[in-house]
Amino acid sequence: MNKFRILFCLLSTLQFISCQQGQKDAGPTKTEKVNCTIIKSAFGETPDGPVDIWQLKNNSNMEVHITNYGGIIQSIIVPDHNNKPVDVALGFETIDGYLAEHPYFGAIIGRYGNRIGKGVFTIDGTSYNLANNNGPNHLHGGVKGFDKVVWTGAGSINEEGQAQLVLQYYSKDGEEGYPGNLDAKVVYTLTQDNELKIEYLASTDQPTHVNLTNHSYFNLDGSSKVLDHVLRIAASRYTPVDNTLIPTRVLEEVANTPFDFINYKKIGAEIDSEDEQIDFGLGYDHNFVFDQPSMIEAVASVRSLQSGIEMRLFTEEPGVQFYTGNFLDGSITGKGGRVYGHRSALCLETQHFPDSPNQADFPSTLLLPGQEYSTTTIYSFHVIPDK
Image (cartoon, rainbow, N blue to C red; front, side, top):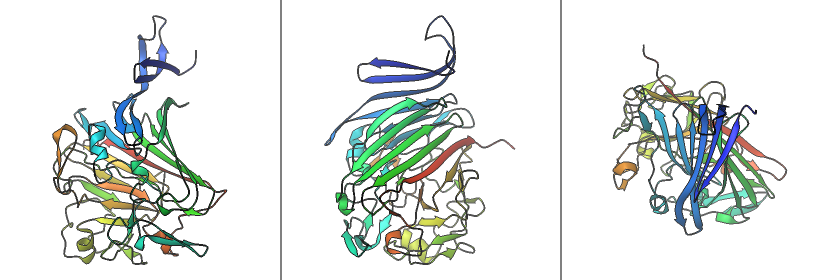
């Protein structure tokens, strides 16, 4: 008998895949241990056709719900210090909320996460004009970025016995102004260690710029604000911006500024400081430059002392956009009737730096034919040990 057995059960529009260990002879409903499951069900209609949602679950009572509309993470459910399930991600219960205007809740962002100054870049002497959908600048892939398209999805149990969802999208040459046909793939994996692993892959037939990320909004205890969450970012520098949030081409030290999160600090401790950069971002909305990207040591950690939940971040990317929901204003009602007010969530978007196509000193985001774009980020969830 194989170590892991995969069961397929199709019930109308619902597909159930379970990974089991130690199955007894009495039948598939009798198991000693269920390691993981992935359930696919219909999620609704979009202008581009029907979409589905997948529920990934491990044996540590963690669940992640993901739809192939925009590759959106709809829910991340983890146990708190009382073993009570907490949904730590903002979002909507139905597809209708995602079809209405919203601030990228849980979505895959592409082709380029963050801003490109003036909506233009040049490759080999040719200028490419993009949509200016954020003031004078281009933001998050344009008017219809990867967050608003239907991806092809396939769920399975991988060889390690983990629930996994593979999403693929073919972005045509000229889409949103970007050159080249781009084959993009995002792989979501829920491990038994309560890690949500996100692998981004892409290839192109023409030189183009690529900077993929995920735009999940996190609140680790369901409170009305995240200002009491404590945060650490292993970044001694950040990229200051102008008043349109485009980097100023320099890297500045965080020491002796409100941007110093080298050691754990409450997010709200200095968020309203008299600081030009705080004024420009209306709080934190800045790219932090990791001292060393790492898949071994956490490059950032955020904790709720109320729920006891800690989220650790691991990535191969050189930076992270730390955003404190400054533009949330209470006009959006999400899951469970919860109103998403000002600073009710935070984002940690792993990335190359904003406006890299126009800033030669920044790590390059240029992808050439024959190259593979490949980068991985992990969000890991734990309960803070009692002291």
